[in-house]
Image (cartoon, rainbow, N blue to C red; front, side, top):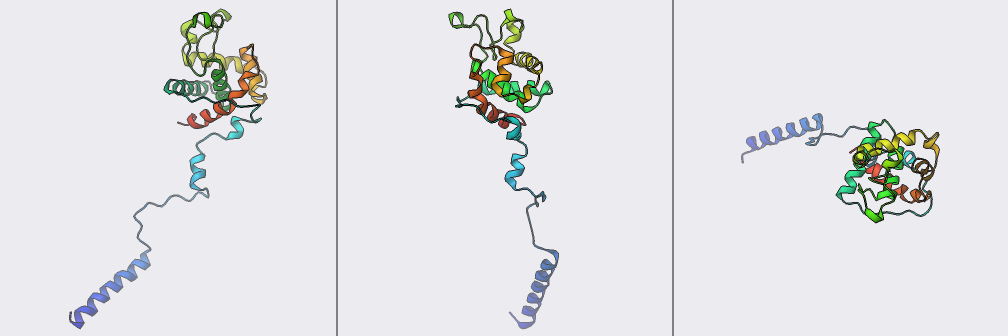
Length: 195
């Protein structure tokens, strides 16, 4: 290459380089907004605060089951009904823990000889006790709203241990049994509240 052509090419390359420095680095990725939070914190921002879900900490040994698609759908229905009722995440935790104890989040029909009186649905509510018709009680939204109506009538339910709030509504023969499901219920609400 002759000297004149070489100087021209190097001069143009130098101008391009200098122009690039003046204009800033090339970035083919859109910059993320600066929020002062780490990416993990931004991801966690859409999850309910654990202090709201379990304000008193869990009581006693905790149980956990693996949920199938039906049980997960029922948990989501409880969360949706809680939102429809205008209640906070804690009400969903109490509701899901109650349903985990009563039916393992299964919408149970009449179980014949294994049935507890005429108990039905996610919360094992009884038509003979005024919870509604069998058709209503086996509707996840209706049964959740019925449970939440009872919960709202409990003075200070937000400040009670979960098992006490649930027992006041359910009047179970096993009043302390609800406590064992608090952590799993909180985990379910944390996972699905904003989904």
